[in-house]
Length: 85
Length: 273
Image (cartoon, rainbow over the protein chains, first blue to last red):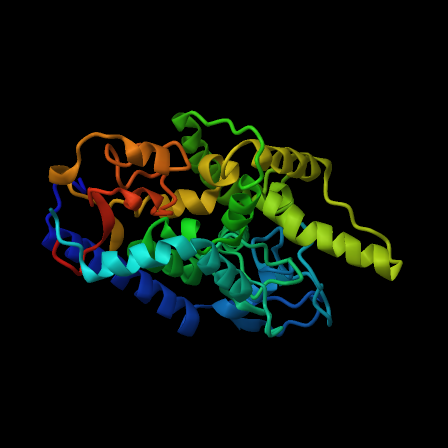
């Protein structure tokens, strides 16, 4: 496929890919968020976390899916220092 | 004779300093300022549990988000953007885990080559341990990538265990499979060049998909090639650059562009050849 692509074709493919990447990245950074249950279920206030915050949480194993498929924190007050894996 | 472009001239001047560039990137990934920016991914293979990691590992993020059934827009967007620009040039010039293997490969031990088909195992690792196993069985499964990853074992488990031992705390040992894989990896890097990158790296598998369409690539000028096969000897990873200049197994070290005839040069879509 690449052999048959002219320089113009390569620029178009590159442009589409870079646009896709930037759009996904921007959406993830600025718009994407999820509701997270606190560890203690009795407290029904959900935490809304942006994707960058979710990335930081998963890097220490701070979030898991519970049996009902909802996202839940694995810690109460202080997050773990390192990923448990 | 093909006239060298400005970019290829610049690249050929930078080529002898590749290890210097890799060292400079290493400083970036090792959090020299203690920023711990784990809310962002880097585009390289470096464990986020390493005490000296600036950013989060994109593979760890992909796997964890797969386990949580969340689409990882940031990680996927970053990998597509970086892949579209550079392809596996990241592997050859920026990745700290690849750099470690390059350094060990300098030690004069007997080296064995890998059959080309072993490169397909990277896609198996990506699909199984990074995507499918986390999605269907969660991060507790023994085949979850972070539970077997040698980068995690070397960069995170070993320093953290050392810190625990020094502090007199209880040492949290990694599981037996992870230790075994680490042991095999540490032997393999003395006997092969970049065994992880060429056989098992899921991040390299992703970037290799972009090699034939990325903005920066290896340009092959067929008119200049005399089939001398000097590039076969220049390539440290068993490739035949003149036959497949942007192969998915290529880590884009660009050593093959030391071709005296300008048959292989650094190319970009932004310049006319």
